[in-house]
Length: 380
Ligand SMILES: Nc1ncnc2c1ncn2[C@@H]1O[C@H](COP(=O)(O)OP(=O)(O)OP(=O)(O)O)[C@@H](O)[C@H]1O
Ligand SMILES: [Mg+2]
Image (cartoon, rainbow, N blue to C red; front, side):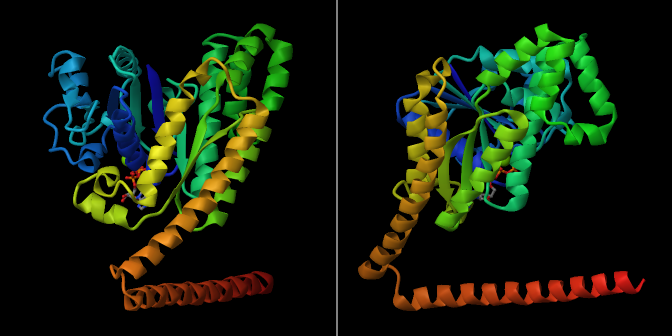
């Protein structure tokens, strides 16, 4: 069974959208899929799938009132897709106990499916990191916004430290060393993995070997969502470089998805975009992502070469170019078919111009405030 955990540092970047639509696409491709809503305490995946509010879910299972785990797996009317609801209404579930988490991981691993897709909550809680590390090729979703890319990197940094703690075990010189770094928060923040490994190689060669092995297998995949412009694709490079330099982690790029206003309509109609508008650029990009997952199923045992990883970033940039072209010709088609009038288009451009002007004014105002604050600083 392939496990596809879907995580992000920042919230609201599209994890659940990707989890739902990717699972549907994999099911349509003939894979038997189980999709689990592990955003415990804030589950909303059933809404995106257009399913009624669940009566039972992971929360009821953990509280022991629902019987065996299989009884919380529900069928859906999407081909080959079964669903494990989370639980939005049981407060406190966001912080499950380690023993509960371990049991849940065990049950999830014993599910009978070709793909197990995990929609995770945002952030770097320890359960989230452990769910993410159930696969060596987990997906990290980000948007091109600076805060999102930074948090994507920080998420991976936390995942790597979780992995190191796992490799170093509970009682070892290596763990003592990590703990000493952690006690002095500032030095942990500055510490970068190559230097830590160098030190551990000296004080605890055995644990060093285990850590290096596990790190070599760790090949997370990036998914860049909500692009507006082909230039946005460049934002992935920064995460890639930081991961390589500071974490010794080699990222693979799984692809890009443009922002599509149609998604709002799909969401409020409670129909996943892939079913609502399968021909849209966004749906097509999701199919492309599913195809990549399927066509690289056997890579777990044969890791990509450096050149192939680099190639995955170039491919993503090309996708950003070609999807943008397709978006433009889509608008052109709408214009030609009369579905969109030139008047509509003019209105859209005008309202965007208005937004741009507003941002420009805000920007000037902030600059003004900043200049004044600096001036006062000097005066003081
Ligand atoms: N490519 C896209 N185009 C348009 N809207 C999008 C796109 N991706 C996501 N959205 C919208 O952005 C919002 C957040 O998406 P989603 O709920 O999937 O994010 P999330 O990462 O799961 O959030 P959370 O961290 O709260 O779980 C939703 O309203 C969703 O419809
Ligand atoms: Mg979500």
